Image 1 (cartoon, helix red, strand yellow):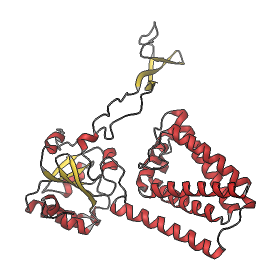
Image 2: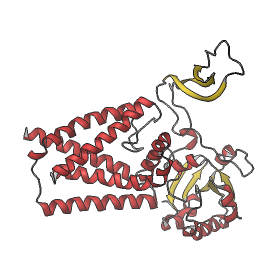
Image 3: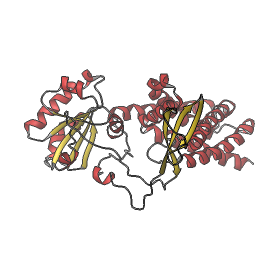
Length: 372
């Protein structure tokens, strides 16, 4: 029994540490996933706090995993882990049953799991944590109290520092389709053998005070103007095999609305400065304007990509502004602003504008005069 208890402690502890660190590598990714859940549930008032929730949850997962392994204060942490895994199981179960959430973000974007896989994983973890909860009084600490506290404090500070660094300089490990070395055009291609979901339209109407539901193939025989339209929804009639293009909707538009994506991708070497919006603009405006001047003085094409073109036009007069969808930019540019050094549609280099050394060398790198 002691060996079994030790093995389960290590399995649960390592899974929580791994899960927390993978998400801590990209805390904004979990924050966006939380926003997706809150949007579905109509909890719009919580949208502004998702990043803080993400930072706290990632840190807690790592610290709780360490606590389980060292066996420190298991009466407390067994309760906390049980509450947390019940909550996670509810989330993944909701995602499976509702079909409204495709992935849960349990291991971030580095290890994408379907909602079904996440639910099964959480059910197994739930069983293991229930076992630990029932056996909590028999777990003996592996370290003395002072050493255990130092170990937990180190794990807390290390996780917090990792997340601070990622929010300033981009994730240490970029698992997104816009990472360095990827070709955007290739990432937009649907994988061979992909079978898309088969959708049907479901209509909701009201007649004589009654709500009536029907799909596109079964309109009522007496359908006329007495039917009051309420809603229309896409319903998955038959699920596909889940194979989709990593990038589905990337496009660049001029201020007049013309799609210029193909023309941009035909340019041999150029730079994209990506800033979704201009919040905290004063913190980075000097560096970006100097960077733009440097690129233009060396005749390197440079473009400002944003979802807030009106504000961009107020701040930037000497650079071509391109519009891009805000949701796309959340994936392409986690940090604001993010610099992409491009060769046609391939991302040669990607870095945060907070990286002073990269900012200084970027133009030389794109011109091939300096190897990064």
